[in-house]
Image (cartoon, rainbow, N blue to C red):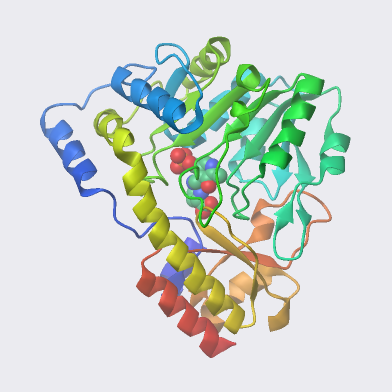
Length: 368
Ligand code: PMP
Ligand code: GLN
């Protein structure tokens, strides 16, 4: 879809690539680190200062304690953390449960390990999605090895509520499941919402690998600095896989982010303001254009129902939209594994400049 946007000159609200600025001080720090010669391999587990900053962040925000020495591992983005975690935890034939729609790296990561992703559909509740506890319970089998939870969720923008997290946690404890959480949008929760890591619930810390990254929080998706926190034996297993995927990466970025993470709260509050405004502009625009928007409580994305424009298939809608309206979106089906999943949703990203969002809205209204 990004290629289609390039070819057609359409406004690209497809891929979640931010057009928004990064903290200026952070950019200066990286430039300084490069010039000062910080250009060789960092320690395999990540710079000690960054591991300490991540541990401090988890303690301050969530009351979760991790030892920087052996319970925090820096990775090449959340993507490598996810792949390494699944390689570390799964044997061939194992099953990994995740909520559908699923971020596309999860089924691929499970396949790397010879495991299979079992999608559990989220239930629609009018303008958003809720946990279907029965569907989750029914998905657990003797082969279930890992539950992978993404909250805030891509592509729906859903934030799992405390009550939903309690249901998920209860089931993981009951069945002895190991848990991997993907929390890359942890700082981007709008309105009165709060992000709570599943690891903070009773009985969960000891069975959970928490994954996040700097990409979304600081608008530096190209830097690919992520991390994983968890009990030492689980983190050691992830490190064993990571060692032979990339070994280590991002030396100057790690150095700069170690300092930036301490001041993340003020920065993230400002970024949330920008993104929330964009979300509202896009949501209102989609509504006016007749493309019913769903609730987006967090993250970069908003989903819309394309049926009022005469489509039942989001793929066809997204292929035709650049020519019909000059806008690019991504069909939600790219994230759906569940056989009966609805096909009429598409995903628009709003991590863009306000002008891009307004331009897209104007084009959609014209084409409506
Ligand atoms: N998980 C989710 C849910 C995402 O949306 C993304 C964004 N690309 C990632 C993981 C990947 O993060 P990173 O760029 O740090 O690898
Ligand atoms: N995570 C971003 C998205 O969902 C982009 C990353 C990618 O395209 N692999 O659009």
